[in-house]
Image (cartoon, rainbow, N blue to C red; front, side):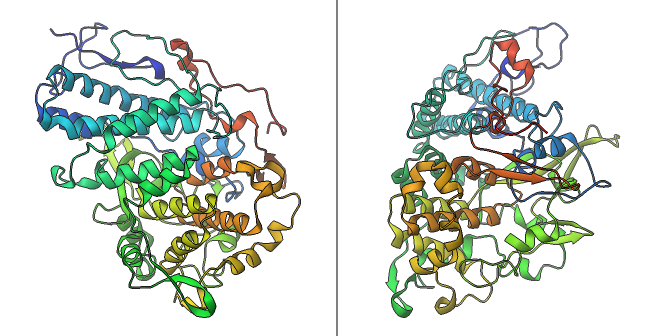
Length: 534
């Protein structure tokens, strides 16, 4: 029997098929990859199947303790209190770590197989796709389990192991290296593969693959987190058209509704103004939100997650007052108009429907199984807001405002250019209270040097952070926005006990699985607590 062996020692998980003997593994129909068709299938199956959304949503600022009698689960409860999650089930850091390193192991197996076949030209797009998955998987791991990349430092703190070879021993030893080194390797895989990806035509369902559009969306996020603003704009603009700005009412600069960028947004954003506005029930929105023909979605991934079943009933989630302050039509926003987002509720369980449950039984006669959902990993809305933020950071406010007004045209009910257009003056006026607050996070924690920024720059970033919070609610991105801008998070229990997670606290880094120590991977520190441990 051929001894093909794949495992993830770095995740403390060994994957075997068939035989009891540790190395004597029965190959399945993919183990010996000897055709382009088998290679393509292995790469397609290698996308990571774990979600960060559930374990991050209860860590951020828009969640509340709804009190006893609600659904309680450690994957929801422990993050609310910023405790290390000891469970290893769905929606936990350990689950995420293992699933993402499993994905990495699969693509490394595919890349090795392609190399042994001589990597013929016809395999180039699948090799590129495999490298893109490897880059993305390590990027998500370092973003969760290491200190956030700081473009103004040497980033010498521990990163995550960057695995590029198929494992052939049970417990390989790994070095976390540094955040800087991890980012360097992530970028290398990204750059080497992005121009070699195939056309959409090679895939049956392109939105389940790293197409060129999805890869450019990923690149725009990667460079946003890295603080390389020019590259954010470069890659975002390969997805989202550049608008033409004209002078409108009272000198306000706007983009014509007939401009290609506005037309693209109208046709390729989640349809909150149209389809979702008249949807009879939450299930209709859930199903439509992550359909493969929904052109907002640039990359969809199948996730093993309980979000679809419990997101609205978990104890630590959203209540009416939370959504009224931020998301619903009655929430104040810089345009002065009403948001088009909708939410549903049962009792005091309020939620925005985004995830539809897929239940896969363990076998045909079983009543038990695993809950899956489809996750919108990259969307057009993120690409546009990434670009707008990069423009602000480069102080190109005219282009930033153009992108923000394009966004608002698809998110404000009965949008009227004269009433709702955002200008430098309106955004500064709206955020005046925050700008004059000496204790505000921008002045106090000075992310990206924000303490010395002009009021216009500060206000535009606050606007973008608000738009991102609303647009990606329940999708997990808020955690990284708060980390990037060093925003303290305060949680309050039903009994009125409050605590704050401050920038620099060790609990911003998720803890690695203890089993990672088997591969000599050091765990994250747990000594620098800037507030009491709950």
